[in-house]
Length: 205
Image (tube, rainbow, N blue to C red):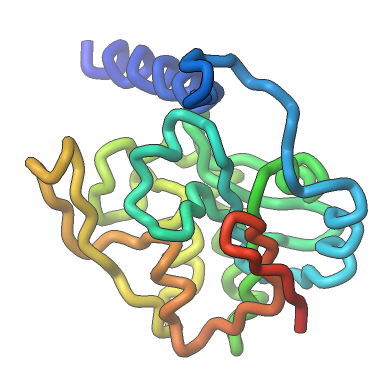
């Protein structure tokens, strides 16, 4: 019964994550393809990214992004493992995707750790090999794992601060969780690329 409930919840959130909401006129759209990261910008990202980098992305109108407790609205994180491949935690579990597919979004940032890339890549590949399920409850531990937790756990030897997240409109609070801001605040991560037109940010180092 518990396994059935988990699968049903995972399916619901998978569909929920592909819905965009528009203010004027007020309607919902399922998975449209109008992203602000253009092909030219994707080529620039591919030139910047290195194995072991943490890559964050976000969307303007996807409905699930409305509930992300991050002022810059980066709703997903992953680790670039080389050869054009990204490992990330999604509703279907930890899996691979390619860098071009991952950059189909509205904002993106690339963080370069000061050390530990080889170890982080090994850990990320192990999570993918074991098909670790997604952690919908933001629980501590790696038997199930959410996207920012994947990145944080792969770099558990570095200073990546955990945060407190509010859920259900502040009625429930989870402490010691990784969020996008964890990587912005980390003293062991250097942001080498960020494209966030909502805040007029467009730079690379």
